[in-house]
Length: 110
Image 1: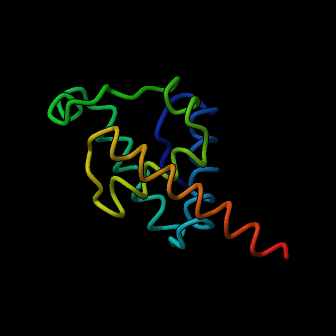
Image 2 (image 1 turned 45 degrees about the vertical axis):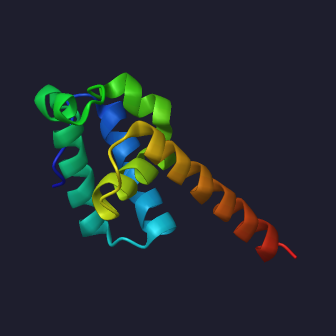
């Protein structure tokens, strides 16, 4: 049985979808994606850890705001790439990634 992150089934479902997005977008195995999701959830719901980075603690509302694909990008950036924790650095990286994905999609539809 899979480890549940939250008592809220909707949160767990969101992270199931995040796991699939991490596999599809970034090539992670299911086990690696799940492990990273659990690590991210533990870190970014911890007030002390977030305070040390100068970022807000994340909660269920935040996760739903980001949606599965947004969470997949965040987890990949912060844990997979060990990206700069500065929120603006992440936003720049995400914008570049989205542009690359759109460009690839346009190129693939020709």
